[in-house]
Image (cartoon, rainbow, N blue to C red):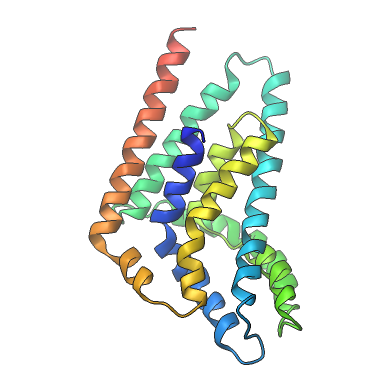
Length: 223
């Protein structure tokens, strides 16, 4: 496991409270409504959501790696990694609720979401638990500052495979909380909403972003 995979997993775990706020209502609906109810429904929904993250990470990571390889810019990926570290710092401020600048980036994603969301709504009511898989895949595109920030790491991962694994690690980090919401458990929800938990997580992400920015800057200066 690379540090970036671990960092993405950490973002998923710490940011799960945000995920529950955005997607928890859907997950809860799918597991409690009589027409959707099945122990497999939340599992398929979250698998679809994680699949959308992984595919997006692969596309973004592979595309940026190819562009960087053929560009005339020296150390292009390292420069972009500094940019990704900046996004990580913004994410720390977002999770800690110290500054909500990422909300503006989420608002940009709303434009794309308006085009995609009808595809998800067309699947309701679900004909079977298996239909939760494509429904979750569509819902994975819901505008989210956490997803966008993690995608910047996938973009500078150097390959489609690493991009997919970074986003998959993020999805795995969110999975326990989202499954517990789907199965009606509230303890983890309370934990993720804890101010102490959120502040500790934000500080960890902040230090990780600063560390990466410094590390990448030193590498640029030494070349």
